[in-house]
Amino acid sequence: KDWLKITIDRYWNPEKYEEKKITLFDFIESYIQISKERVNPATGKKISTSTLKKYGTCYYHLKKFTVLRKRQIDFDDITIKFYYDFTRYLTKDCNLATNSIAKQIAILKGLMGVATEQGLNTNTDFRSRSFKVVTEDSEAIYLNEKELDKLWGFDFSNNIRLEKIRDLFLIGCWTGCRFSDLVSVNSQNIKDGFLYLEQEKTGHKVTIPLHPVVKEILEKYDGTLPRMLSNQKFNDYIKEVCQSAEINSVESKSITKGGIRITERFKKWQMVSSHTARRSFATNLYKSGFPSISIMSITGHHTEKAFLRYIKVTPEEHAKLLQRHWLKNSN
Image 1 (cartoon, rainbow, N blue to C red):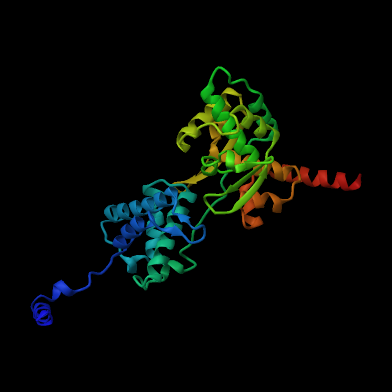
Image 2: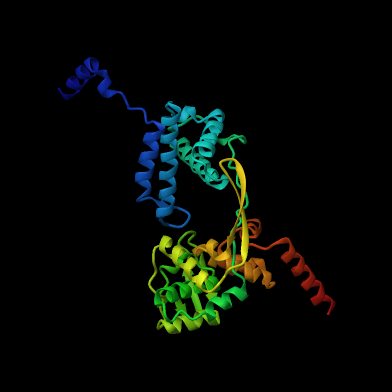
């Protein structure tokens, strides 16, 4: 009886039984929702909020692209021609920097790869060598040890808010921890003069000896860290900290934006952010002659190529390192 009903209904109303084709945008929407509960197999942890935000930004740009170009796109439309049109849109219409465009292309390639694995897509143009992620070296800054000493010696006793921000920043400078990892540090992570930590981003376990400055800061706060703020607030306040301490050297920053190479000059305090701490840790250790492989075991870089791109050492500083090496050996 049930079979007969369905058979007759399927004959008269076949559209009810047709499988709905999943479009590119259907897939991305679904993938973002699933990823909120999905576990990263590399770390065993949930997908981070920042990664979800990247998916959302890519989805937003794809939707906006279809509106501005007055065209629909699906899996089969992600061709080499689309790549050039989309990068042109990101460059001219959105005025994005080269590395920001690279992130959107990388996310799109990743999404297309997942859809292909799931059998939703058969178009493999996104794997072509022409469908490439183009990046340029970022010109981020770091604070040298003299500047870190200047920060540590500056009296913020009349401004507790800035003093706490300064102390958190210096812990990052002397441990190499990411901001996201510092949020979770407590007294249980510290034992016998070492900080034991599992990095949130990579799941990499690190052991870091406590620098004398870090020990003093921990003693000041009874073995704990000051309460953390949002990353955005921290980035605002650390600039105020460095401005107060007169970290005023002038730095040049070049960036390709909207397809045009622009060079601007800033006072150093204007360029400091939470991530400057981690970069300062790696760069200062490298300049001191400490082995790269040991620094990488703490920062979590898997290749020396990636590590050397990350640290900020000028050609002149490399020359001085070589000069110091020769003097040491000749002595």
